[in-house]
Image 1 (tube, one colour):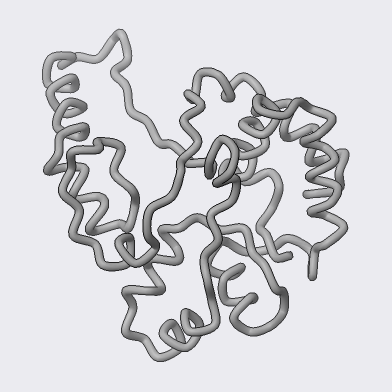
Image 2: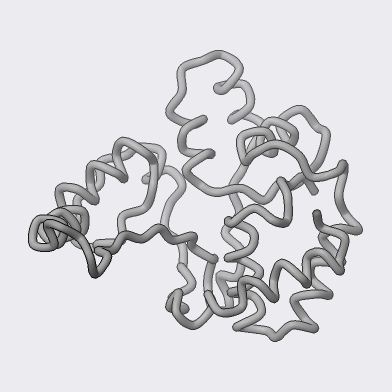
Length: 186
C-alpha cells in the first residue's frame, strides 16, 4: 500500500466518513490494517502514489481519480507507460459507495458585494461551469445535468458514490486525525 500522509485533508475526510458509517473502533481497525500494509512510509502526493504502483514499489495506492484522469489524458511517454500498469477499483460498491471529496464556497456575512458573490456561486453550480471543471480539471461534476465530454472520466466508468452529506461526517474530522495518529498513519 502506498499513500500520502494520514493528516492530508483527503484522508481526513475519508476517515471522518468511515467513522460516521462504521464507528471509531472499526475505522481504527481499518487504519491499523492499512498501516500494517504500507510498502513505505507515507510521502508525496497522489501522483507519487500512482507512479509507485506503476513502478512496482507497491501493489495498491489510495488516490483521487482526478490524478488518474490527468495521467490518462497525458501524452507524455512516462504517463502513458505508468497508466498501462494501473487499474482503478471503486471501493464500497456493495455498500454505501465510494467516498467523494468535496470542495465548497460560501459568502461571508460582511461581504461588500453579497449579491455579486451569490451570482458567482450560482454560476459555479451551473451546468456550463460544472462541465468546464469536469472537462478541464478531471473532476466529477456535482450537478447531475452537466454535460461532460471528458474521455478519461468516461473511461473510468460509472460508480456508486457515497451520498453521506458533508454536514454528517465533517464533525468527525478531528477524531479521524486522532484515530490515524493512534494507528501510526502519520
